[in-house]
Length: 231
Image (cartoon, rainbow, N blue to C red; front, side, top):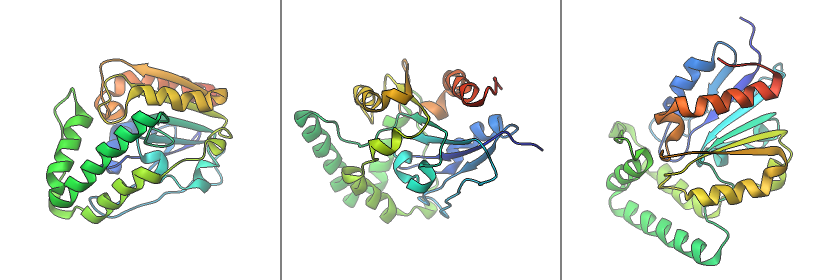
């Protein structure tokens, strides 16, 4: 089978590679579709681009952009971001303070009741849909806790993002994890090579709970990168 390019997909905090399964089914006939796994619920896995592929694409949901190695990000021809961010806390002083306080409360509660925090997180993520909870038999609570702390400090260099030839930013209007207005701030910093889309009435798990809303935008991006058309 002749592939036209390669996609590596990165999940966000509290998820694993399985969240991309439907996307993999849709796109794997035209692309090598690889999925990163942080290892929150099992074995970790970090894929890399095949140097023989001409077109290199990254999908990233939420914190997934921060889990992508810089050497991989620098090779991307197209970056498609779903409810993602260069840094979790906003620019404005009051908003940043409020965001940091909320995250710290979450971290403090995680130390005492990690399962309760994760379940509450999923309810907010999946809203307005019913949340889906994982199998808790093999959860790496320490890694989840470590990455919550990382949210406070992790920043993706805007200058690196500006070197990516094309970026598509897709933000849902009812995101209860990351304020949609902060997504606009993100876009304003990289807009010389990016396009911004808002999908109404959906939440943080937008690419997994409503693929149909995202697929036309993704097809547009794939079509622009090398005239692939739709799937």
